[in-house]
Amino acid sequence: MLIEGLYSIINFEQDAHNVTVLVKLHKEHEVFKGHFPGNPVMPGVCMIQMIKELTEQATGKELFLSVASNIKFMAIINPEQNDTIRLTLAISEEEELIKVKNTVSFEDTLALKLSASFKILS
Image (cartoon, rainbow, N blue to C red):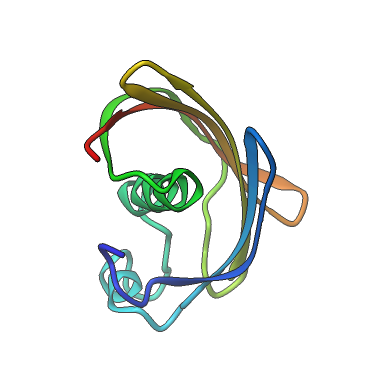
């Protein structure tokens, strides 16, 4: 985990091509003290890193983000108000790439949509 202690996995469900993960954000983490003081917001770059890490866990492969497209931040994730988020990943493998279509939500609110391609490192 690149940002140690930012989150923990509550539930990880996986079938052939889909992964659903329930994650608890640790609102006391240092990243939230700087982003932003008094009004913590989950940084987009941390969300993308989380998606990479969960895709690596699902595939058992070390990955490098090569393309991210259709990134749409649709709602702010404030860990003090919504510390549990759900990530869904539709994963497919093509040659040397892992492709992911992802959504992140809390309660009934869609917070992030993203399509990404990851190069397989090992």
